Image (cartoon, rainbow, N blue to C red; front, side, top):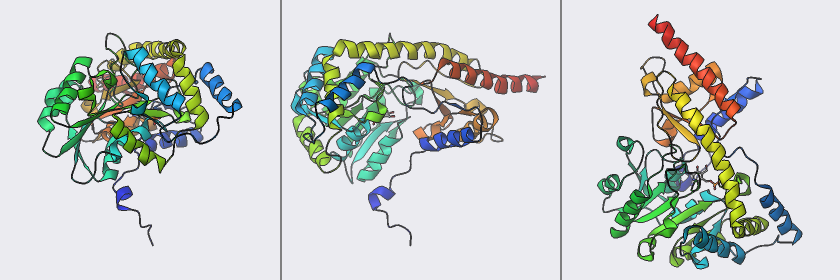
Length: 402
Ligand SMILES: Cc1ncc(COP(=O)(O)O)c(C=O)c1O
């Protein structure tokens, strides 16, 4: 008998980004010198002072249940941090702790939409958005953004709204494209949605990883009449290189937050108590926290500034300069010839087998013809990857020309 999986779960697909990671692991086991550019997490350690704060929390025996919303010092620290950092008026009652940005998004989406609702998701999208929507029974409606180089505009949102649209999910800086929607356009988009009584979830997982002159923008700064429709999904994972700690939060209206807490109280309950403690204390030490972020940002920028121009020197590869996050989203459509390469997955497989450079197919993110390359890896790895790519493609084209 096959397992009688529930309808909700059957509608979800397994994450295809894990397949590439698995392929890389298999090759490595066989002894190949693999360059893994699939990694969606910082290659830095968690800052020392945050690790010490978690140890301090353990020593203080902060090891028991907390409120489902998160412990008071945590939700207060989030509210104070947003005031100090962004001059945003956030009350602790508008904050709920979550086990990472992913759970924050799951809570926010599941408490709002269901059968009969439509959810707008700009392409290319982070793979988890449509799967959570599938779980709820609502319908995904994708917004094409290629015309504007994957930077969402209010016009594109407006053209996709129907009478059933209940929610828009925006992720800027974006995984996978690294593109950033300018602050003025974000305001326009969210104001438009609020006017039409459409809710907006902003996935601000890469909030601080924005390269000047692009600006950091959080929807938490919007006025209350607009924020009535907004839920910010925040995460410590990328910001402080804490992916394994599993901590994030939502910022929404008190009513929405109450529903989020209700849902969470019957699932994860709350993120780990001493992790909440460490994050609360780290947010109180805002300057130290932001200095740690600035250090990582400077290193990502150094890599980006070298990697993107280098990629553009490879035959048949195009990549605009991403304004944020740590991904290069390369256009390989010139390579797709209907023969050896029918789809971008074939290009990814070729890179894997020929030069052991592991990338993620853009089709997983709703962008066939593209590959995602993470630069959350050492400069040495990036240099090696480019060298192998140039040898493979630039030599091949010279041979064809001769
Ligand atoms: C766009 C985006 N949102 C949210 C997350 C969730 O991160 P976490 O659950 O670790 O906070 C990720 C992780 O890769 C991401 O890329």
